[in-house]
Picture 1: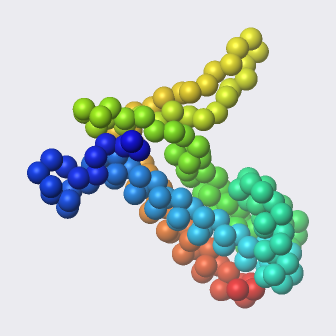
Picture 2: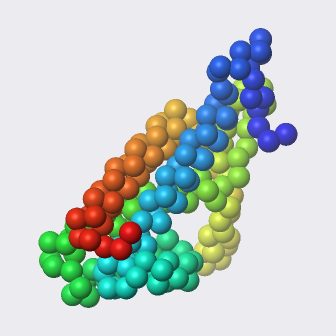
Length: 175
């Protein structure tokens, strides 16, 4: 079983369980994230003064969001951009970083649910290596507040996506 029943008792398929709502929101967040992160290709191309194809190769060679965002920041700070443009780009990358931890939390967790109540929890798939011990499997409730944070992140990513596209087009970066 992957989660609580998708169809509530009585056959009303119009209402989704809390677990299904969570899965849909996490899917939308990951789609929004990937779509927005891929726009870094255009910033890399523009700031490095290269083609989109070369920027794609660079982007795909860097295998983490952190590395990609760091590269864009470093290119913006290297003198390739005016002070105003540098600040605009680093502001955008700072906002990407701000939302990265929530996205990572839901993308790198497994989900536990109570079949009777429908209560859902995330269990983090991360090991924290401390001085004398290991900590792993941190568990958090997925409540209304958590779902609101996911929705807010999706909306923030939409705005970021729009702002990055606007900058790319204004600066004439390769598209």
